Image (tube, rainbow, N blue to C red):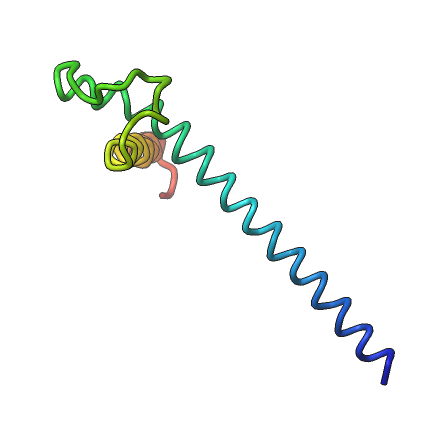
Length: 96
């Protein structure tokens, strides 16, 4: 019976490690994709649409922006990426 308990403990340890790795990958994806790439794509779009008035923070100052501003600028960038990808896929005849 000790061997079964040892194997079960080892399996739980491996599953916890896999869960931790998955959470780190999800966090890094969010941090990198949404907070960095999407911000840098959304920032000039928001500046263009608002005639250079919003966001008030510079393109490298996303940390200083409020949570709402960060979210709106990053969502603008993310949506523009998805729309651009969709348009390019349709123009090239790819299935989207």
